Image 1 (cartoon, helix red, strand yellow):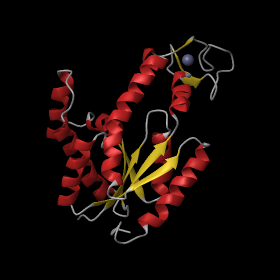
Image 2 (image 1 turned 90 degrees about the horizontal axis):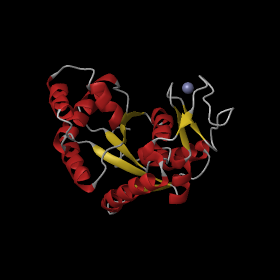
Image 3 (image 1 turned 180 degrees about the vertical axis):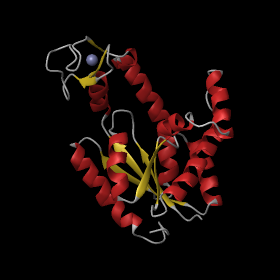
Image 4 (image 1 turned 90 degrees about the vertical axis):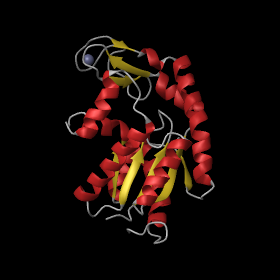
Length: 233
Ligand SMILES: [Zn+2]
């Protein structure tokens, strides 16, 4: 079996990418595949693939691209078995750079699968920094808050357990700016690669959550209905 069509979702940290992926996937008959979650799931298994990934984790090394791709393909096969009615996957977190995109094209080509569209969530840098730098986390129970968008009832105190709220060390404006720089450096060539093939749909991610969801659905529904873009529709 093959001939599935997949959608890739690209957006920086703080763009609401994960939230939007979870909301739009079922409405588009796509299965949300978040790469981070994929590895957490894999670690609950004890097959050859899981053992191979664990060897890198145990040594504190990064999992090589080639192995990450095998994990993804293994999961796409699983998705196909478990969700026979799905058009394909909504990929969230992969590919992150151009080399990964080229490798993904090779394996999708072997499966006769296609990429129907690449959704690019666009959020101004200043807005991302405001969203990310306002995050607070409870030092005891781990509950998360935001100074503007989701403030606790009592300033600096957790609603659930009353413990002190702190900022994560990687949420300082400097650390956030560094992460956004890295993201932009990796993503610009990735977007160019897909733009040349006419696959990129830019979505304004600086709107209320419902408006972003509606914009993604309005952009993707006609694309997924085109047989040459999405043979499995
Ligand atoms: Zn708490």
